[in-house]
Image 1 (cartoon, rainbow, N blue to C red):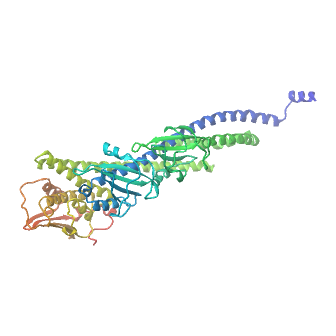
Image 2 (image 1 turned 45 degrees about the vertical axis):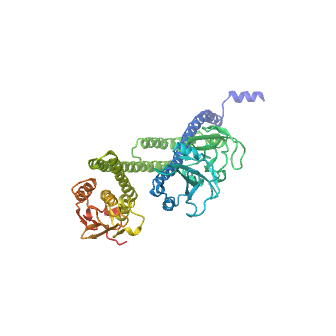
Image 3 (image 1 turned 90 degrees about the vertical axis):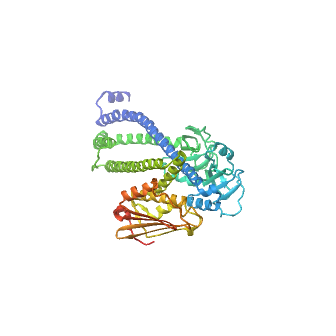
Length: 564
């Protein structure tokens, strides 16, 4: 028996032996090299995944900061409401209720002793329960800055909530505390917008590591975060096994919120992250056995069929990275053809996005230049007509507020322009008296282009300011009527004040209001302006060509002259 074995080893071998040996020599080292390369590739993929997770955590933190900053901004805007300073809580309640409609938030106002004065979640005038949710409110009064709470269970709403507190110090009277409370589940949108795949989940925790929002289970809100971590990223073990989780250790990426001190935590089980590597190793071994079974020739042939298209895809990917155009190619392999089409679509999407960004930047630059020009002119004219720095500061600030109100309407209207009625109301409302009978507006719908709207808004602001100083709004019985109509392609806007005894004004003195009305409205818009001081008040009539006011008809929607 031993002689036969020695004869087989020393003698000629069958072709199957040499083929098997050739396949073994070719495939086994390749499998070994592939294992090493796969491990390195897995490390690279893990770095990429970690980088994407860090980007997701940063994006979630930014989204949370935007939400909280929006709440702070809303509180700051509400704190400027005149009715809050004057103590007209009914009017402030109505304005706050309207501002917070549909936002999932409600507002409370507390006095200096933390006693509730109003609550937008209940009808105005109903008895209010004392505030039971705790927050370092005295610190807010002392620091004078907004403070964001942690998550707490709101007994009134019956939901997990959080709040932002902003102190308000009026010029006269005791301080007030503005408390905006919001449902915690409104932050889930900030998590659902992220591409959380491959076992990754995200949570938002407060300064006490209590969950505010989670993409994993909504029942986790209000509970301590399930990992005992020190607030920084790393690998941590679950404190107590929880149903639904993989258990073991978890990889965490943590990003701090700069506004609230909260943390955005993106986490995944290490077993889930490492599973693709183990799966790849199993597939590699199975593939190696399959390649050995099929034969070296088939592997070589298939390699030639795949390597060429993949190299072309790599070249297309480099062209995409360089911003060059990429065209789809029909490959015999469906998957490669799909990738080629995806690269071509990505190149087209990138080109369109770059064009949109360039267009947006040009629009921003154009509007910024226009705004700077208007502000510069306002500053010069205000300084020219002011006798003291305090007078200049007061007048310039009011005109900036008027410009800001017009700008808000321009941004809201976009390319379609601004409704004349909305523009007039925005400029006159800060000066108008409480009685609705003392001001009337009438006229058809009329939409102005952005630039004319800004000019007309400044002019109306000046007329309203003069009415408050000398005219209809300076007495308790004065009235203002604003009317407009379109006749012979001309907009006729009439400003008529009615007072019991008109105060004569110095018509020779040319201030910024006169400059706005005569130069910007009259000169820029080719308007005919007439001002008549009747015995019972001022009448100012503007006759402006419609073609100097209308926005582009292709984007403006309804034409002028439509009745309300």
